[in-house]
Image (cartoon, rainbow, N blue to C red; front, side):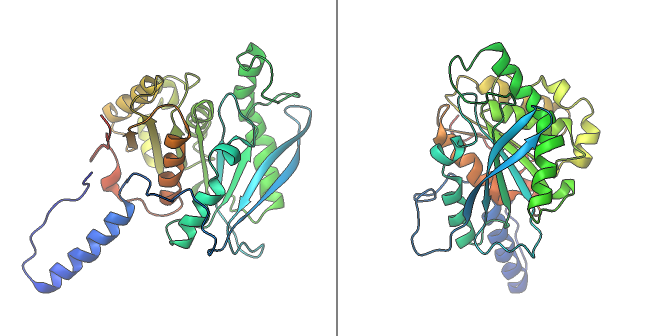
Length: 300
């Protein structure tokens, strides 16, 4: 994929400046994850994962979430926060068990490729018995994923911002997820642009609202979004849900990154989504990456 334009410079100085520019752009281009990106590197600093328990007025009981804090975490500093959501068959431990986000992030920090951030991995099934047991497609369990929007906004986020040194403005709050969690992220993020400026959906599931419901006012979305990321595997049976969102956004001129890679509905694709999305958030994004300028369709 090439997101850069070739420009001829008349002088040596200009050529040097161009090389600097190309280096910056190359660092922000969307690339397949390199070998070893999700493998533990024993010689680098590591972050920490804690389990938190918060009172949910929405559900009516205490609920659990996992929190990753980056290497060198200090309670005296302020950090942006990414809320990272799981799929329909998982819980707060799905990302940890299947995607090892702490390993991906530790490696990125060691390479200076990501902004230090807190990552919160909640249980997106907002009901008293939120375990992924029995019929995970039961109506009450599916409905609980929609209820989580209220739990997230009214219970979890306030708790996190009391317990951790988290920045509390929308510009420093992101939401992303896989499959059912991808649909939640698009629904909740785009539905609450006063709360989130960075939104990502990885292989978003059929719970994703129709595009005209997700973004009823494209002009408002254009002004408020810092980054909207949509990715999916080219052979994923749910690709149509990502594609219809992309087509609507493109038609209405809403900048976003649409990244399709070889793959199916699995953690290979979702880890790639986290690897790339996490490098882009909480810092300026190269406009050349947005699909209104250039769309990444690798694998198709």
